[in-house]
Length: 63
Image 1 (cartoon, rainbow, N blue to C red):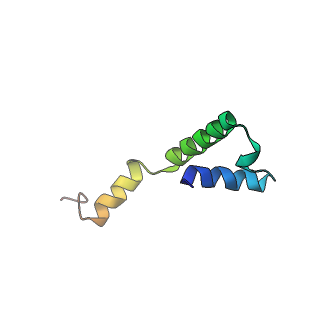
Image 2: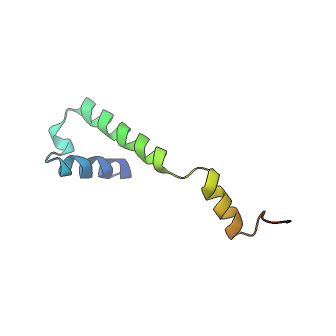
């Protein structure tokens, strides 16, 4: 099971349902929505990149 499928199952399970109760088209839409949320939550640049740079000794004061 992909991470998106696991996320979708967890959410549907909490609501008393499961992916198996949905049509193939609905399952595709639910999994696509889960994939989009996973992508939106993944760190991209910004503070995360800055912290990674600091961890690796890149940048900083007068460097």
